[in-house]
Image 1: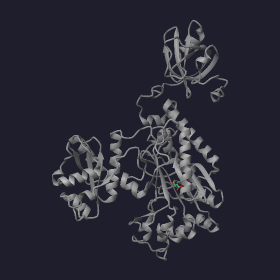
Image 2: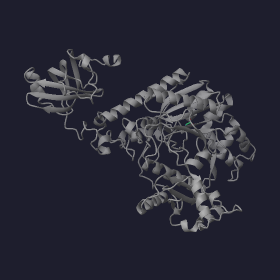
Image 3: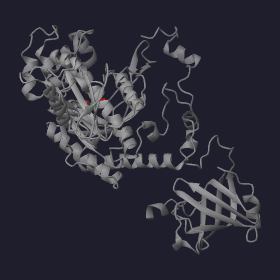
Image 4: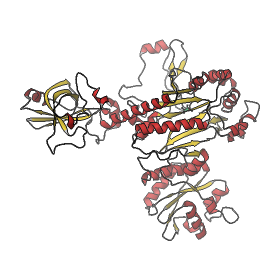
Length: 621
Ligand code: ASP
């Protein structure tokens, strides 16, 4: 309350969300926007709105004829200031839905501060469907809507809590520059031409990765930043060309120390920001990357519900261990070293032909060649197009591995491990949503770690870092990087480095990747070796990572860190899946700011100053 009192200004004594029954009898001034006007002739009611709430104002022609005359001119979204007296509402007319619903302001005078055109959509109807491009073009009106304003406030509280917890834990907030040199995070750079050095460009940071590592070499010890990052990539639903990360780095740490701090920080921040939402597991479950893929088909599992993937190989093997289910596709898949895996959709055994076709189509869209379905009948018999190939014993074994009971639907994919896991993982999420298996209030954080360091890129003939190019290798696998060919420029797909696991950890929340980080390589020789595996020649390394390679020659402490997506976090805490809903001024799918009309052509003199000429768009690769 005291915080709200301090919001008094010459225009208002209270905000529109502040007056209560206790205030009855007092004088008050309110200012805000006309949310709704109801005109009953001698009595006019105005719902006056600001971002704090709504207060009913009543203007009575008998008491305040001048104010009444002015009030009859008021229209939606006019900006007005009222002076009057707070009164209890007539018994029976209180509005329990409004925090101020016990009272109304009986106006003595009204001042129109500004008029407003009729808005292009209903600002005062939370349920009105509004085309998103209209919302983005008139974002300042969209933000007047209660839900949008509330989400921006939640985001502000989130960032405030993050700052507090970091300061309490000895972190130094450091701002790193936005005009830098490329720091790779797997996307294209946005570049900014330099006027002072014609023919050269700055890159906007994809993340402050190299700078934060340099801060560790500088001895800052614990750094954090609410950092804006820029990545030029084709946008999906939850991507934006610029977005905000909580970026941090710590010195003299191992993986447990970093994860330990992050976990405590996440819990504290969550409880400060959304105390009403339960955190599912504390401590957070930790999955090996391989296990997460096996069990959930995802490296960002939604663990609010089970429906885990199962492996049918043991159920399909004969006494000699060889696949002999009788269904050729399964047996051949297994014989070729591939996988037959599935999930059980509880209670979906009665799915219609159409629902099954729909699931099959979905699985194909996800990359499967097909989807086998078996429904469990009363007595345990399996039904479905392939059931006739399966003996009673095999059926029983399948049921057991699928942990399926009467009325359930077993869905099976036979394919390479990667495809089988991925398709089933995505189907699992889809079915989980369809069947309402997850508690929408619950916040299920979990860790996934020990990702493979590299993945062979046959086209580029190199080992791409699966995550961060600066990630360290787990101590027991270091030998896989150091004992291989002494000749740095030799790369081959059989390199033992391909088996190395990274000290890389991701934190997931309700099936979304919230963030990721790693303990870094801090040994300059090992770092050069790792970059080399990733396909950089010595010259390219110097060119791209010269600063960090040099710095590491001057004493780099062991260090590690992480970055969490603030937009994603704020979205999930406010029950949204699209980060645009928690960004004040986001861009569209094609990267446009519809309100400011950006991007736009440069001014003629800008071309000149920068020595640029537009030569047309190259054909898109
Ligand atoms: N720089 C990484 C990223 O942006 C995070 C980290 O490893 O700290 O994803």
